Length: 327
Image (cartoon, rainbow, N blue to C red; front, top):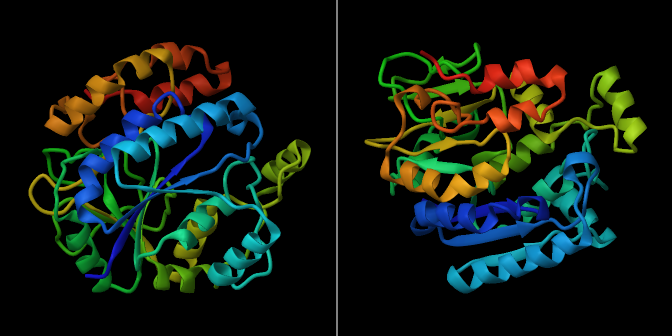
């Protein structure tokens, strides 16, 4: 097996949970990798991606605290022209990449982080990803599966704790398919930038074949109105490429308890207060049955009603559907 970098992306918007989440991620994965790299992005976007200068100061303090506790390297995203030219050329074989996507979300910073990794393989996590199962051989096992199938664009821990009944989990997309009779392993042509393991060499080959397409007309106009670049989000570009070229992402649990992820779909003060207990429960394997098969934390595990009620009315129905636990 080649060397692996655990690369965690973080920004000042992550401050309320950053220390607890990153420490949790390192506890689960730190012994499986040769390098831990936190890629810190302090260039604010717009809307929900915006933050004040004071947040940057506090963000740096938390990163310093994490660095004192764990053996990590911290790299701040370099937006200088020379750095942008290097990253665009090395990964995409282009002269330039957009800094943000049409929403104002991260674009360049994702690829800066991959390029900054010293190892052959990159296990990327957004800083809000929760890890369960705790299988300590997951990285080596996953790389073995990945290297035997050159159509895998990315391999990642199973999205959500595995259900006890057979079949594809409830919250997976309709186009997910079982994979080679491996337990709780599913392939789909959708890509996620929240968590993925890739070989840099294979990933670069894919990137160099992708064009920087615009979003649909509505999102294009919305992005223009907000002053953002007219380009789809990275996961949209990669997902479309996988769909058109018969590549896929593979959700892979692994042996025994395996490794799986949970994602908090919302934020609230109550969630931050309860986070330590949530992480303790996940690490101990104490998962409500109604959470199994769901990759977003649902209302069987945590009460999101406060967060949902603060959403605009046109988003509430979809939000309630997302977090509703199966009966």
